[in-house]
Structures are given as structure tokens and as C-alpha cells.
Image (cartoon, rainbow, N blue to C red; front, side, top):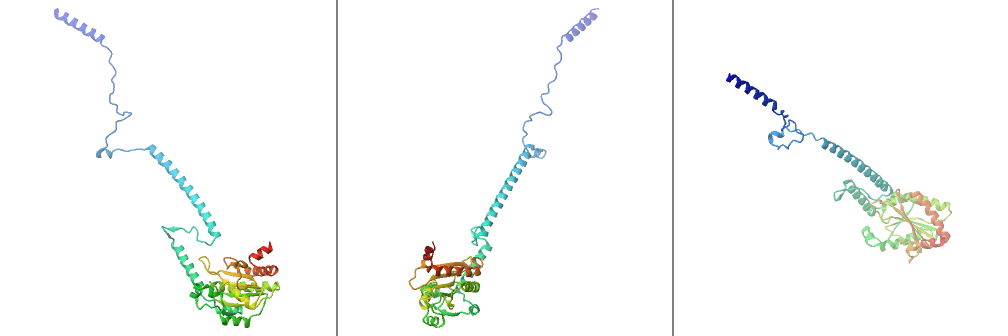
Length: 317
């Protein structure tokens, strides 16, 4: 009886305790399977192979940088193209060596070779001689100055301004005295200029003077002459106007440039201001035929005002 009572009481107590037990709290996951902000994993040789980076923002930055680079490259190309066009326009306006570029601190090979070629052409022009065929075609005879050779001609300009005694006698014997215009041809510092241009210039000048009805004396050729030689010729033949067609000092642009010096009644002691010149006569400058015709009009003015050089300009104004 007592055993049954004890078991019954024990059972009631246990039921009562179970009724009074608080509700079970939900479980909290302290370690998530996929945390939002994972802790940085220390890179090791083993786990580096398993890491796969997906830099989405970095790719966008790279694409933006590429577009910016392409835009800058295109802008730079347009600027370079525009600059090259401007330089080409300048090159077309002058025969000078401008904007030819360099290779390091030296000129480019083509530029340097062209420079050497032009320099050699200039030297040949100075030391060359006018072909006898050219003078024969013009029907002129040859006289000489007191210069013996080219070296002396370069070192002693004064000797190129004086005729030899024999040449003075030849000129007196073979030339018309006191012509209106006396034309003299000389190689000067460029025999090549005479060979390349003299026929066109001289024939055009001759025709221009004929059309203007201006008397022209006997033309002759002076070997190794200087411009001021016209003063001595003026004293010998006493013309109203002397025209000297002479080779210019050659440069690196052209070795074929001819000049036409003119003076009204030249005599010894004439100042340089009384001379006048039409220079740069060659295929790249004043066309030879055009220059010859133009010289005729200048001679007409000189005879009209009886002056040349600065005096002519003053009288015209």
C-alpha cells in the first residue's frame, strides 16, 4: 500500500515539474555557413591555387582607361597630322631645308646626302668653265681679265675687275664704239648659271631691245670677270648703258642662278648705289625668257631718266 502511494505521489510531482518548465529557446547559429564579411584568409602556397578573383570593378576601370587612352591617341594623331600639313605648306613656299627632321643629333641620311650633293654642285659651278659651244651659238668672242686661274680669281677680286692689255685692244678693235646698250657676259662665280640660262636671257633681251628700237653694241664674253669690270668697259666703249650678265655665287639651293647688273654710263669710281641688278634668274626663280624681256623695260627707264640705281628710283618718284 505504501509503495503504491509513494509511486503515485512521485508521478504527480514529476507531472507538476514538467508543466512548470519554461519554453525551449531557439537555437542560435554562432558560425554561419556563408558569413557576410568573411575574415581575410592568409594566402599560402596551398590555398593560392584555389582562390579565384573576380575583379568586376577593376575591369570597368580598365575599360575606362582604355577608352581614355584611345581618345588621347586619336587627339594626338590629329594634332600631329595638322602640324605636318602646316610644315608641308612651309616647305612648298621655300627651297630652304626646313622641318627635315633629325636622327638623334644628326641629320637624316637622305637630307645629309642631298646636302653633300648640293655642295658638290656649288663647287663644280665655281671651278667649271663655260662650254665653247654655248659661246659659239651666241656668236660672241672671248676676252680675259688679269686673273690667271680660279684660285687667284677667288683670292684676288680686284684682278677680276681689270682687263688684260691684250683684251683691251681686242675690245677696241672688234666692238662698236658708243652704242646705246653694251651687253657683256661673264661666268663670274658660276659657269653653270651661264650655260643653263644665257641663251634664253640673251635672245629675249635682244628681241626686247629691238622691239623698243634701242641700239645694241657688240656683245662679248669675259672669262673670270667681276661686276665692277663694267666700269672699265664703259670707259673704253662709252656706251649709255652697260648690262653685265654674270653667274651668281652658288648656294646650296641653286648653283645655276644668273644676275643682270646694269649701270648708266659707268666709269671708274662709280659708286655701288648707281648700279642695279635683277638676280635669281633660273628655272626655280625668275624664268630666263621673262627676265630678258623685263631687262628691256628697265633699260628703257634708265635711258628716259638718264640714271640708274638709287638715282633712278629718286627721279621716278
